[in-house]
Amino acid sequence: MSDSTSPADDLATLAERAQAGDKNAMDDLLRQVYPRVLRICRSVLPYSADAEDAAQEALLNVATKINTYSGRSSFSTWVHSVAANSARSTYRKLKRSAQAAHNPEQMEKPDPRTTSVIAGTRLDLLEALETLERDRPQMVTPLVLRDVYGLSYEEIAAEVGAPLGTVKSRIHDAREVVRPLLRPKD
Image 1: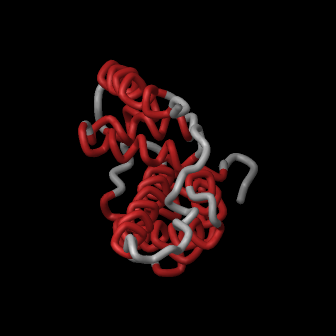
Image 2: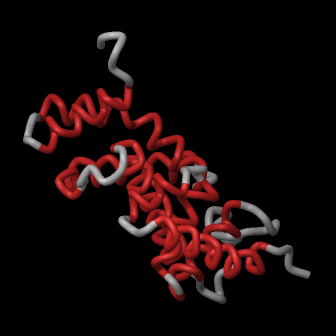
């Protein structure tokens, strides 16, 4: 790498080569984004094994869906979205399996991966995002990218392909929906 290229430039170049079918570039790309993907998944899923499963799913999605990356946003922003969606998808699967396995006759403890004991935990946030996704799915990604991952409004607008004002409005409205769901329950 020369002094004039940044890691983001390297990722973009690898992504272009991977999109063109270069298997070595894809391997290098996945190896480089894995630590970031795992960090994103760990920020959402409290158990390491679940986060690792979500990270593997995200890498698979990067590899199989790289042709959907259009370059509207930086490649790292696209990877961020893929990883966040994978973590949320893993959480939904865990929740569904916990609900399916729930039998009132069984006296087992609830699965702590899908049960929130204390208001304000990541699990409460995931539950709030589930509610938001059910009612207003177009607001989830902008809210997560802004409030969980700290991306700028401009990066989010590029990622979701919406005007800046629309993104700001969606985030504001999403916060209004999610805020009461995150308050401690009496």
